[in-house]
Amino acid sequence: MPLTKDRCTPVILAGGASRRMGTCKALLEINGETMLARIRRQLSGFERVLLSTGDPTLAEGLSVECTADLYPGMGPLAGLHAAFCAVDSEALLVLPCDLPFFTEQAAEYLLDHMPEDADALVCIDSTGRIHPLCGIYRRSVLPALEARLKAGELRVMSFLYSLNWKGLQDAEILPDKLFLNVNSPEIYRQITEAP
Image 1: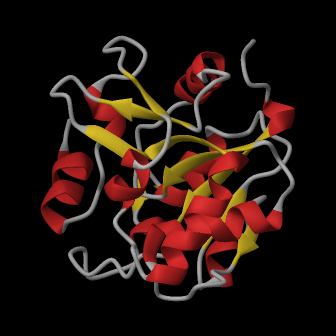
Image 2: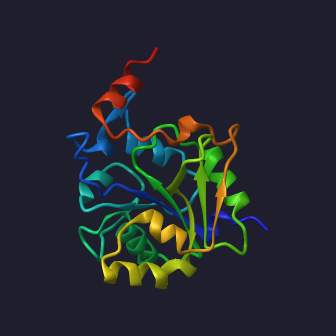
């Protein structure tokens, strides 16, 4: 039985320092639209969308609810934890703010393929690279998540490997372009200057 939208809340992670980019990635524009607005638009079918950020001004003009980390400065795992604490949903659809090509179809595909017996479902690209911050996490991960944060163990892949997780790979529905992180000025230029 697929995971339905009323049982899963998306959270957009926008809490990073954007050191490589040198400016806030969420507000970079592609075709006149910020990356944050682009990804929010692809989540329009969900009743609630969370934004994990320490800067509430990022939410201006967008239909999102901000969540601040309860473990500040501890990276994406802290964002995931704060999102679980903000809602009572069975699961979270987790996405970074700098995926300009993520689609509504991809979100629905993840929901449809979430195994009932798994704690997490994450995307895998055609090269076999795992994208742990592009997927679904069930509330069952919360105790392990809290334990990691309290211990200062912040590596996302290490956390994923501690779970009962599955990978999802489909070159047609989940093409590699979908996972392109705009995390450097060079990548941003390539995207914005492409014909």
